[in-house]
Length: 585
Image: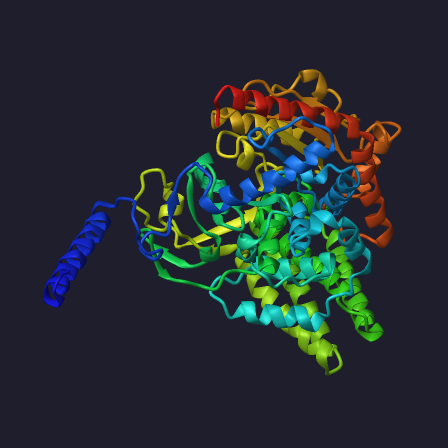
């Protein structure tokens, strides 16, 4: 037995040795037990430990589901099946709920390992995942679309007041609170990282955005950004941080200041803000305004003011029940419409650029002045206070056109793969991923998640099959496997079928592509176009009748194609089994 002095000396020697090892590891930049603040950035193209653990648990549920469906499968060969929901505003948000509701009824929902979304579909994902067991009770999710009590304007304004104090305040906050309160009827104040320790009752969620600097001037590798309960970061760069650190202050890979994680309200505003891209403004351009076919900077400034004010009024209406307040909002809507209609009478076709700029600037100022005069005319009270605050927050942000700003964890990060547009900016600008591809394919291609089968309900507007061809081109550029798209399929774009199967070979995933409007529910190409127009992305919030119609249409698509889904799920299970037999991971 050692003496006390000998034991003490040995302890000191051991302590010095341990400290020496730790310091050596830090100096050599090697893997080790280093504090999060010293090395918070993970560089890898593999799953993080948290996602890996969740997926392992989820596979037990998928296995049970497949056995219930009498699909042969073992614990070692559970297929990787992902449902990837497209964007498409409220149409996508409602459509996704309908698709999942019917999948639950057909005992298919628990075959999903992953659920990914962009743009409008992320609104309903955020709402769904507020329930840690939504997969077992989609009836409740459907009920919330119709029966949820409206969020009060005061509640939305209170939330906005807190966000306005923060460093990264932008129009995405305005958009998020109005979308949450006005469309989803829910102010979800939890954070995404709160889900990191949940059980695996639901498919693992992946929310997708793009980085605006790289979108406009950077390489493709810096564009796609994914956010899960465990990590947030750049898919192709393979650079990630814990989701709870998104928005914190970094420099050269070091965490300088931990900021409060954004809540789901703000996240919805970031993920579903297609109008943040000025090219999207073209969708709002009336013929009388864009006479030359060219949307110049002067016209853009006017459209910014007009569109945002119109959206703010429309979404605010849903948070208000008082008849006098609604009357005031109707009056403001009429004032703005009169201003816009008055502008139609003034010809801009023959104006020079300088004259056009002057004219558009005048129109913008008139719109803003009209709003200011209207707000001052309101009776004193809570409504006037709330609306005045909202307007005072919105107008300066319109001028800046700032969306989705948050802390950049790659600022001055010494890694050769980091694009200059990320390296040199202290802030990221995260915006709607649908501006690149309106389905979250990039996060699910390749070896990282190794997907066997993608179920892709298509709620997008615009050219049918465009999400497929864009994903194919993206995959080719990134050298990732993607199934062949037969040219004959593309000939159906004006009147598509309700289901297409793109068969994957070797490492290619199979894709089941299911357009919301199709030959089963539209008698011809003319009706298909009419439906797409009636349920367009950029319109005021849906009526209860429209919500029900989209919901039932999405459900019917799943019901009609149950046999195709089962057939491809079965093939995916066999494919995964063959991989396992061949010794592939």
